[in-house]
Image (cartoon, rainbow, N blue to C red; front, side, top):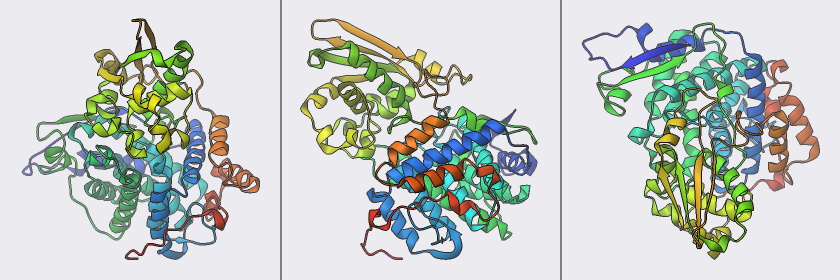
Amino acid sequence: MILHKVKVYPSKINLPKKKQLAWKIAEIASDNAKLNKDAVEMVVNRIIDNASVAIASLNRKSVVSSREMALKHSRKNGATLFGINSKLKFDCEWAAWSNGTAVRELDFHDTFLAADYSHPGDNIPPLISVAQQNKKSGLDLLKGIITAYEVQVNLVKGICLHKHKVDHIAHLGPSVAAGIGAMLKLNTETIYQAVQQALHTTISTRQSRKGEISSWKAYAPAHAGKLAIEAVDRVMRGEGAPSPIYEGEDSVIARILDGKKALYKVPLPKKGESKKAILETYTKEYSAEYQSQALIDLAKKLKKKVQNLNQIKKIDIFTSHHTHYVIGTGANDPQKMDPNATRETLDHSIMYIFAVALEDGDWHHVKSYTKSRAKRKSTIKIWRSIKTHEDKKWTKKYHHPNPKKKSFGAKIVITLKNGTKVKEQQDRADAHPYGLRPFKRKNYINKFLTLTKNILDKKEIDRFLKVVQNLKRLKPGQLDKLNIQVKKNKIKRNFNKGIF
């Protein structure tokens, strides 16, 4: 790996392309490096993972609306839509929009946390859509997805967006553009321009994940993927982009991030080096913000220690800066304590999540978020007794450069009415790659079977699992087989009139 220093240059200094971060990204996207075997197998896991959560969310409101929009953009020899007959094809950018929304809706796919946040699985829907429309092979798709993960993970390691309240999809636009470029075997110059254009158009604020969180949280990554597809299309036609997008005098860094005196260090593999960043990412066992995964495990364990939950006086959670200020009481969002809050808000409230998991000793992607569940009096009592605190030890562990030592956990102190304190702590989720029971292929398949129960028939389940595990041998034009069809009577419609 090479650690690239990224800083702002005044316009009077003409920074050569080859010294720009966007060019460095484009170089590794166009280098045709050998694919790492473990990375290839992990891509298969993540496609299964994405399919699980997408099918489970097919009839949720935002997914239905996104699908209705895509259905208005049919195209011969285009791309497929989750749930819809695979013989029907649609413009790849609209398929990416709909499929990306379905993947993101439940907040239940993979994650990578470092200097910033990310859900690298958001790269997969736009890449599959473009691959289908362009008749690419399974190996082409693998190359693209592995590249996209590499770019996003390393941008997340080097550049913090959250500090400036910029939404993390700003790292997704460039990674999708780079992945598409690698998959289509585009030259370095074309990918360089596409990366810049994709970044320029995907800057937005974190209000989408603040206060009353709306369905835009599900749409945002899909929108970034759609914009990245359009960016690649545009530059393939010979057009350029704002440049240098990272280092320029009025660039993203200069005007939106750390400013003209900023210095970022972004790691990237050497040209020709196998890309393995996907192996540093992790999926979710529970449908909730990733930083709550270890705390759900903690709650399940603490339930066995605290026999009578009515005796709880207060609960203190000592954790990292990110957890405290994003999903904890440090966010100062009253909505995070409101039983009438949206599902999207509740899954960003560690107070709510911990209270429910402690009471139930479990977590369910639907039942744990119902209105009746959120309004249960006993839950509200526990919920409002919880306070989070930043502990610098946990913040340091959160940012540890060694993936094996990086921590997303907390220390829990439950104080009972008689003064007894019950304590428990855990560094990372049990399902984390370095947790007690890391997710393996069988776990991904079990998650798929659980989430698609009563939605898919056995024949379609068996067909999909067989195809996806044979991904590297799929020939050009066979990627439509990665789509999953659902019986027409199980697909909800939204007949509200729009523009399309």
